[in-house]
Length: 100
Image (cartoon, rainbow, N blue to C red; front, side, top):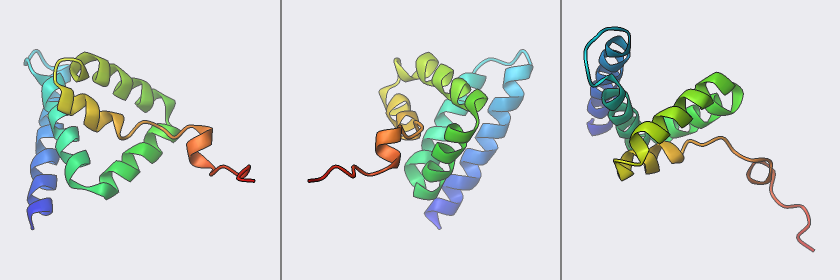
């Protein structure tokens, strides 16, 4: 039940943050960062989905990297949570086969 409430509230704040980015309302970046942080921390499935999307869509990955740089340095929790969704490197994606 708690995860459902967090997911709904985070989604609403994310939409408001996206709307704020194209209007002159301040705080859109923070709203997006906090809503994504809440989603990532409360749902392992959201973390896996975001990581997969960042791996496939380079424009989305660039946007997340910008968001990490913009907010992550100032607010450590946000930077750490967004860092959990970084795309997998080739070493992480395929387990080491040279275990001899």
